[in-house]
Image 1 (cartoon, rainbow, N blue to C red):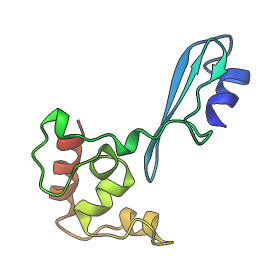
Image 2 (image 1 turned 120 degrees about the vertical axis):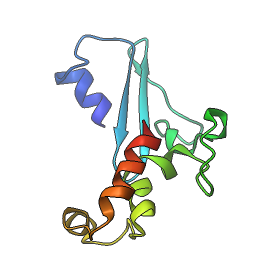
Image 3 (image 1 turned 45 degrees about the vertical axis):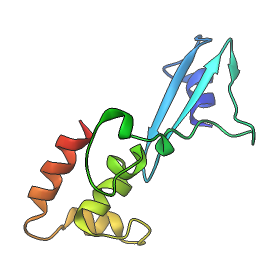
Amino acid sequence: MAAMGERMRGAAWGLNNFALGFIGRGFGCAFFANGEACRDAMGNAGELGMLPIEIFGTGIPGINTLEWLFPLEGLCRRLDFNSADEKIHEKLTYAPRGAGIALSGWIRDAA
């Protein structure tokens, strides 16, 4: 829906070919080609979060997909937080001491 909105009224207005990435709890992407939304076999937009990252050579134990590395899920794993917690944003805002080291590592590895 976000990609359709961008094509109709946003940054992708007038474009027939573009991709819109979404980074939140997970990592997704929608593609438009020749003015049509590309869909998978189930009729959904693309799920890039499940892309294996061994191909990028991260070497981080237990981290084997993009989704486990850099969206909210990846940060929560670094801080040992549950990303499904209702108050996750509040907990991230007031992260405990020492979280800066985990946050720096998360930013470095995601980059």
